[in-house]
Image 1 (tube, rainbow, N blue to C red):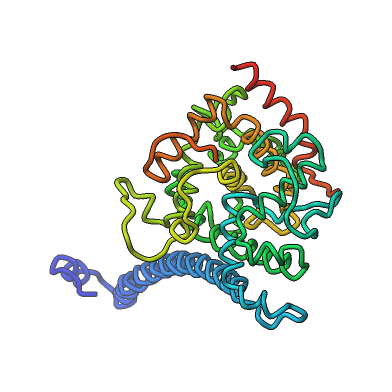
Image 2: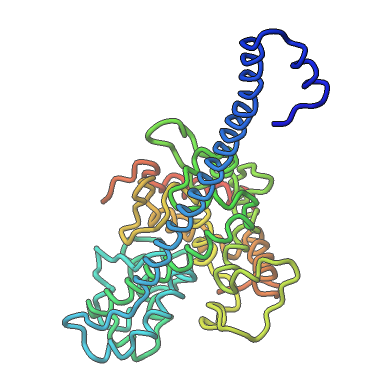
Length: 387
């Protein structure tokens, strides 16, 4: 460090070599101290930068692991033992239909423990599965579940629908298709819910986000057993629960369906569907919302601590019985499908998702949500009273 002329003159006037040496030594130590402080500051900044980069890399690593899991689950399983050759020949078709069924009809493969109807040969004699009478008894509900599955299958697959090998392939196709869609939805959920992107990274503590807690109406979030409700505020206009008019806040549901059917680009304002890469919507040839698709979107909206919907329907972390949640939504929608309120929702969603107007006729411990019969009955009663 060089001294100014005034500083040098002051030092020259000092008497005694020891004093002079002391002062010079003190002055010469100043740059060393400043340099040390500067180095410490640079070290702290570098540490912060490294920590941020580490967080980014961890997030990328989690995303890559999830993507690899989806790709692995989606790979054709042609080495299965005891699978008839005719089924293996239809492997790609089965997976495509299973993915469509999982979004537009049922979130999970049909359960028919009472009638074992899904293992019976076609055709299944049942009531109309679009009628509220399908829920009259356990018998009619199970028969209608299978009839609804048959309706989506071509004749050559209906003939083998009762085979266990078909059940396994179709259920696996539903699971891998669901994982693929959920992975892509999480990548765009920030646009749908207007929240930070990091909130939808797998394993992010979403129940610590006040906005999410408010949207879902979760209680006891600070405990080991937070309480969820199927009729959460996000499903209602202005986030105010009114059981006379569920699903009136249809836009988030519509955005979820739109992204699942037409891809990320469809969320941009002014999006117009044109020719290009085949989307799910084009492959499935869907043109209107259904009770199943609205119920699917409402269930997906429960972006709880779970990052996946397991085959048994029970959330690993939340213990929510998603099978029963979906069933409750769909039952209300089927029962009230022709009501003016539901038809208004259907018309708005059709216009938003498909660019068209008008309606369409188209034993486990759960912990967080128990028996939903009372909530279903209360919802139906409230809607009846509103007519």
